[in-house]
Amino acid sequence: MQPWTLGSSVRSEGRWDDRPVKILSIQSAVAYGHVGNSAAVFPLQRIGVEVLPVYTVNFSNHTGYGAWRGPLIAPDDVRDVILGIEERGVLPEIDVVLSGYQGSEGIADVVLDAVARVKSANPGAVYACDPVMGNAASGCFVAPAIPVLLRERVVPAADIITPNQFELGFLTGTEPADLASTLDAVDAARAIGPSTVLVTSVERPDRPALEDGTDTIEMLAATDDGAWVVQTPRIPMKANGSGDVTAALFTAHYRESGDAAAALARTTSSVWDLLHATHESGDRELRLVESQEVYAHPRMQFEVTRIR
Image 1 (cartoon, rainbow, N blue to C red):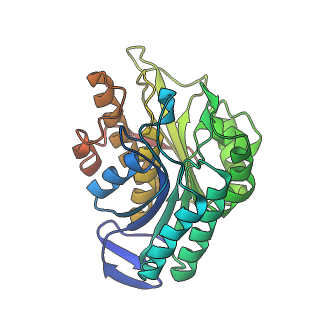
Image 2 (image 1 turned 90 degrees about the horizontal axis):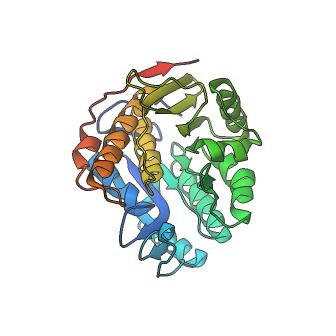
């Protein structure tokens, strides 16, 4: 990736212009609650990113409720939406293609085709993939073919990936546990293709607790320039959509600044405050709108440590 300067200037094909970062976000959407594009778009807009959301499903609510209504959008229909965007002459302005949960096997072909088209129109564009498969607590919750498809075709085409620790293990055929094995797994993931890996939940047995005994959790980012980790208090809740917000914010901050440590710090601050507000409210759904100031003005309350 090229270095990028903080602010509104964006470099594209060797030129500088004053426009916001522009992201083509191909993800699910729900009417009630916040997952997929329904989680990612507003925080991105609040930090000044122009988002072109393309939906892969249009559900009443996320599937964690056990019941939902609405359609999976056929891959050809998703492709038509992207083609319509291309016909408006927008692809040379796209800086990032972002993808998340893939509800069907055919969506992968659509995403990869969109990435190829965007990169042909703008060679400086990058592809950020959140390889959604599952988590350590719930196991794999996507169709059996999706994890293999992500590992063998999608992740190798990505520049940035944002797996949790469980997903990182599947992608690399490892069982990351302590910091050393997690770093080894990150290196294995980077060898597949992506130059940047953000591990969104690192739960190592030897992680230190806080002085008051509070449990902790970490995020880890690695690029060609090094690796960094940040530790936060663990918030005891399951928050659907928090990974989508994390992937979106980290990608945008890193794309704008070229500084993975700074992107990690800003993202961690924003997402932790979002989760804390949600937990305090007692709501099941993210307090996404109520927390908007923490995206625009993160408190930067957590220290990022270089580990390599």
